[in-house]
Length: 166
Image (tube, rainbow, N blue to C red):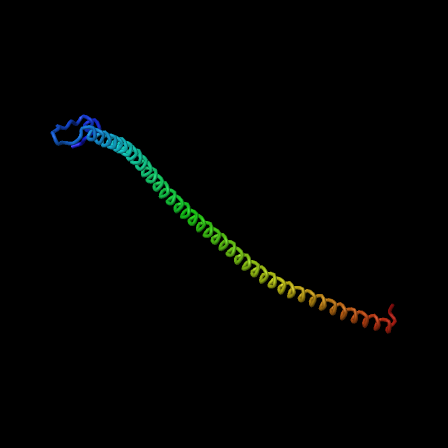
């Protein structure tokens, strides 16, 4: 049962011959009623504060949930960005390695081609030297044969001069 300040103030007691003094009881009841009134007001204020704090607490809890959700989402985004960056970096490295291998293969092919060209040029040079040597030798033989013919002509001329035919 809840007793209010008004209930205390309106409470009437019966008096007896040897009972309490009415004025003292009234003063005491007034003090009790005042104190009870203050306590009731304080209780009401505290209840209002509790309600306000409860609302604030719920609001803060809601904000906390939103912040946690945002943090989780942000962390997921950061993780996704890192994963994508790693994938892209890996792809770039793989592409660079593939290009490097292509360039190296082309360089090896070019080197092989140059070696083949050098071998062909050496073969052509040897062939040219052989032909040139043969040409020189044939010219030498021609010169020698001309020289022999000239000697024969000189011998014939000298024989003719000896015989007196001029």
